Image (cartoon, rainbow, N blue to C red; front, top):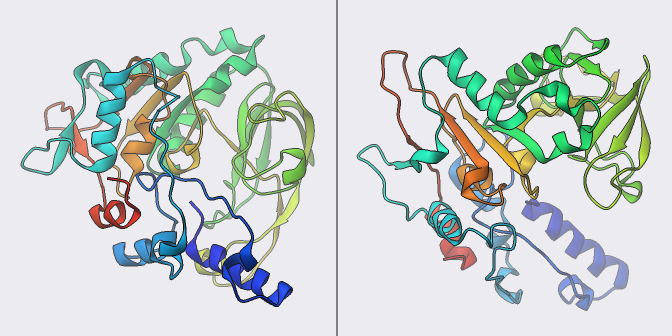
Length: 339
C-alpha cells in the first residue's frame, strides 16, 4: 500500500505543473486497495504513525469517490473460505482469552517437533524439488510465507541446498537492513524475487518473481515468472545499492554493488500482497505482528484446501495449538468504510 506522503506529493506536483489548485489538477486518478491488508511500512513506527501514513488520513480522503468490489474472484469456488477470510480481515472471528483466533483443523500442520513439523510444511508446498527441474514454472505457484525475512531465509537456505545442480555464491560481508542478503546462493531453475525497480516498463519491478537460468559472476540471466511479461528473458546485473539512512547500523555510509535478488521458496507476508497462488504454506515461528498480515497470508490461496499453517508453540513445553494472533486495527476499517 502506498504511503500517503507519496500520493500527496503527486497531487502537489500536478497542481504546480498545471498551475491549477484543484485536486490532482482535475485529472481522473484511480486507486485500488484493501484496507484489510498490510498498511504502509513505517520503520519503528507506532500504531498511530502507521495509520497516519495511510491514505485514509489525508485531507482529501473524503473527496474521493469510493467503489466496493463485492465478489472474491480468487476464492469464488469456496464460499465458506471467503466468509472466514472476511471475518479474519474485519477482526470479527471469535477469539480465546488471549485474543487469538482459532484456525480450521484441516488447515493446520500438526506440531510434533520443530524439525518434523517444518518438514511437513515444506513437503506440502514443494513435494519433491527434483520434479520441478523440467517444469520450473510450476514451482512459482507455490510459496511459504513468514512474518519476518529471517524465518524465510532459513527455509530458503534449506531448499536451495536440496536443489540439484552446481551453485554460484555471491558473497558480501555486511548485511544492513534495506539491502539484499550478504550471501546469495543461486542455482539454475531456482526461484528468486527482484528487490529493486530496475525497469518497470519491461516488467522488472520490485517483487517481480523470476526463475534463474544462467549464472555469471556479475549478471544473472532469468525468466520473468509472473505478471504480463511471463516468459521474457532478462538480465539482472550487479547494481549500486546503499542502505536507507535509518537502516544503516554501521554508521559509515557506503555503496555496494550487488545483484538485487533474493531466493523466494519462502518470502515475507508483506511481499506476497497481490499474488494468487495454488499452494500456500504459512510458517508462524512467531505470530504476526502487524495489521492485516494474517489476512494477507491466508487470502493468497484460491481455497481453504490450498493453505497449510504451521504454528510453533511459544515454548517447547507448550502443547500444539490451532490458535494464533490476528492483528486488526478497527479504526482503519472504520475510517476506510471497509466494514
